[in-house]
Image 1 (tube, rainbow, N blue to C red):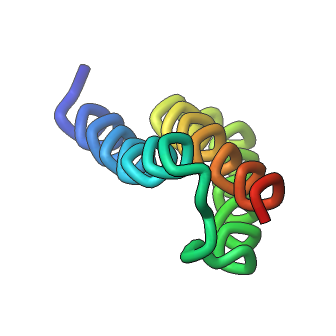
Image 2: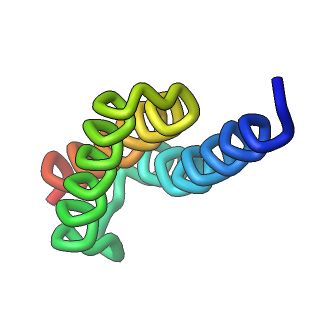
Length: 84
């Protein structure tokens, strides 16, 4: 794996896992009162578009990063709707 591809995987992993502490806190507290619904709708839409873009250009780092991020951010969004 070349250094540019590694950089893509690393950046994607950090971006995806940045949402993990928030997800764990929501699961633990069952509270989403301080989370913006509009922000998570917009971010999930953007992540979905990045995922589609990655698929269209066949870029595995973009596909994996955005798939992981969409799962985590999407779960937060679903919990925001559920606990609202």
